[in-house]
Length: 102
Image (tube, rainbow, N blue to C red; front, side, top):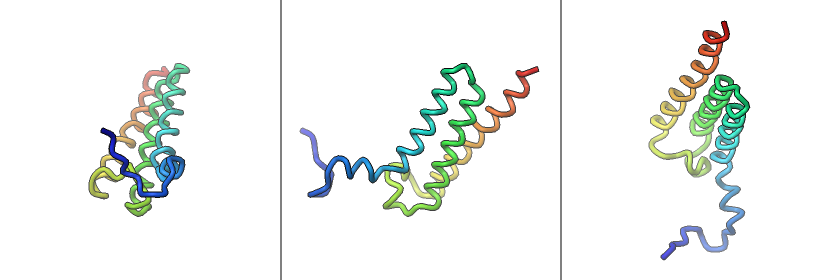
């Protein structure tokens, strides 16, 4: 049996709009995947890394009640994880492209 966790009077549309931080990150990540599908793997990886850096910034500066689904763990752990993985993808996407372009 499905459980309705929404507060009374909250419509589905409002619930989706309340999750705008994760939707913005997923849209940027999806754009990076689209770039990869157009045979630009390294640029796509860099865009995906920037979307994770966006997630880190949103998690750092927005209150926990606003950030929604981006808040998985404590703030410091979330921000450090998003930053490390995002920076790694950006660096690999930009540096590896330069190595393989010769």
